[in-house]
Image (cartoon, rainbow, N blue to C red; front, side):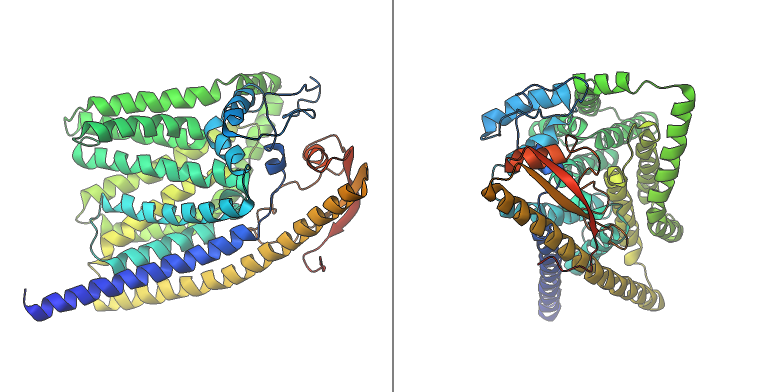
Length: 481
């Protein structure tokens, strides 16, 4: 390499790094704005209290109990999670994080959550480098931006997954944790082992258990991917790795700690219904799943288009694409029999599809001729323009819903200062509200029962006897000042 070529290569690298940093700063600024304009909502108020304290009437089954005490430190959170596993659900890993962040100012969570979202985008790229080695920082910048566009445009209930405090710890943070494990699973597929270092293998075991214990969707996806990769290595490549089998057992063990929690067992017993009711629920869940996965059609079409060229000379890309798409569908199936369905529960299948698109784009990027490059640049520019329009609309609605919740919070605080015992609050219409708002699919106030969730926790937090619905439903066009 001549001196001129070396200088050009260094300049190209420096330019790529600058572009990448600008894109990360752009994405981080957007997410910090969105996080800062999403207040505490519904469950966040409940998780300020110790689940292991207080008494709860059996017929109501609302936890934490009305007479529970506030959480004031980490040792108390550990005790609270014992009660959470007993009475609420088995997801103590993510909910430990919820109660931890509620000890501090919301601003600390806003910064940490923004960094976690940006880190997830970087981690998606890092996972793709296991299959397609890193080539340039310009390519990194393009694929990171593409991942952001995919998540912003196509992830169901974006606000609940990435902005709402309780939701972020349950979905964004757990999916990022699971991505860390996916990185090692892809290395297992590529090399036949996680690592040749014992320390890295032990880290994989810790990650495997935490992934299994973090969220049911992550656990199912990790178990499916682990098993398929192990079977492929054993049957086709004749490679056997003891660490991978132990990691699979650790993931299953973590998963069992969730689904066998006393609260989960009690819920399943209480949800016993007739065959007709179960079929009705199955039909309803199928319809809701189909509606939610409709958002994935653009990514699935992209995969079908890109695979023709990507599969041509790269068996590794072909196998990983099939693995990720298969895991995407299989990990979505448990939602068909769930007692409760919400679009936000498709958080990790969305990330898997995003990773798949990332790998396919990077696999064909270097082989584009001039004509194809021009077409793809035009497509990317069009996607960016559509995304910017969506950003403007979404961020505006996020700001308006924040103004609404802040005005209600200020009203409740004023009523508390005035010594009121009973308070009435309005709701906001979801008609026309952008799906990026965390409040879009959440119940802000119960219209009929002031002793129900979430009213009871508003009352407890502000010190009222009751908080009821005022009968007024405001719109985004109203002035909340």
